[in-house]
Image 1 (cartoon, one colour):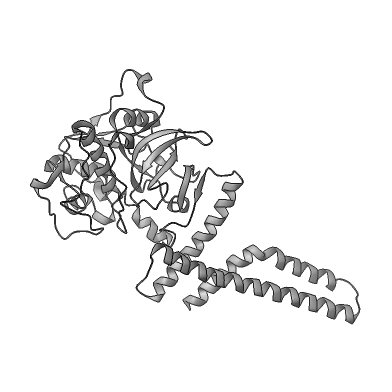
Image 2: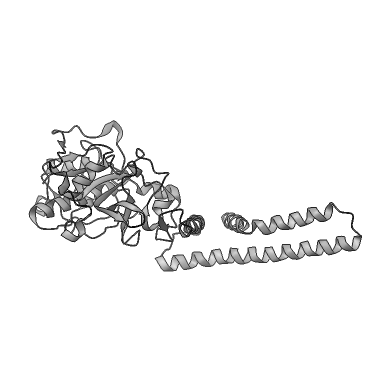
Length: 383
């Protein structure tokens, strides 16, 4: 049954490409039917229609076979395997749907209608509902923590002209290598560790990779209100680190991409700590720019709930459907700049591995009315 559905789905894709031929055949049939022709001409007409239909059926069959072949090639390229045939079929449907989206988007890119490219990455086989589970920025019920200390107020420098036109903290040794959260909605933990890694390096001169698993295992439930692989908030993680007087190093508390049964924090393995955190003014991209330039990498939440974000490969991401309010994914702003063609952008580190985007990064539109909500929930820890 599932395989039949796949074939029908492929037929739909193919007919969308060959619809003009079928319409031409129907149009030809109508024009003949409205005339008063002899039986000989009627037979010639019917044979012509049958010939065209056979040609289209052959092309349709070829495209279906190509779809299955493309799926096998994709699995081999990305080392994909699935526990059973049902899941293989489900992932194939997701891949073919993504492939159709990619082809249309790339035509738009070639014709200059969009500013970024998409492609067949390692996430192209994810059904969209499963993809959305990776976006783990979620405000817990009850709005999380009862904090002992209110977050500090961001005070921009008096000399605004000192803010450079472009910044990339990777060049200054404040950013660790791109990590991969896997099939766990722990983006918030990666955003939090990334911001603290940058602050620690900026203040103490040493770049240390910190443990996301520590945050996943030790901030679930009360009093911090995070939900491990089901989501959380960066500020809650910063508060835990302050209260706990540290977070362990990545090497001492390695990532498992799943919820641990208990908190395994060891004080002897602490890699960094914070003394609080700062929330930036919501929706203010100018303040975010100043903070990135003067403080270092900044934790932000964005609306990443779009197929275009899932399949992004290159360019300045300008998604008109993005919301400034529907935030679902925690990432790290590590710089900003201006593209000669597509204008201002934020340089953003994601946590989906180096095979996603521009080697794990994405350039997102800047100064476009807080597109995707990149300045709606920005913060950084104090060291």
